Length: 122
Image: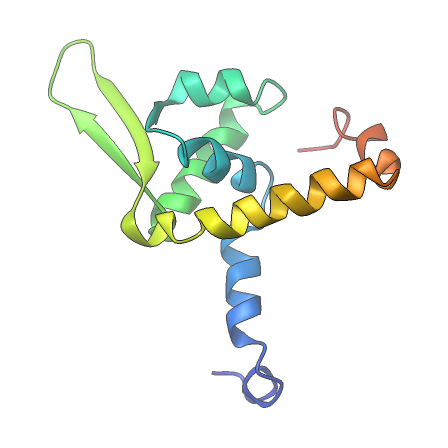
């Protein structure tokens, strides 16, 4: 492990930042905190996410063991996504982030964040 990381006790924060940073990952985790969802159900909740970007983010979250991908042996194929046990541990953090964001907006901050929301490059 990196000595600077250990020296400043920031390794856990760097790890979390790396596994949840990425376009749409936090929102994917947020939506999956309520229920398992199929790809198109997630896509409907994230209308500005391209199919390619959403697929990449889901694969990354699956690789990091925060979500699972379940394939049903039926025709036509059925696949859904949900939080793993370790992934469920992030729910209280997401709830705190949501609370902070709501409070931040209520106090009149953050308007500039949404100016580029829809036009962000993927």
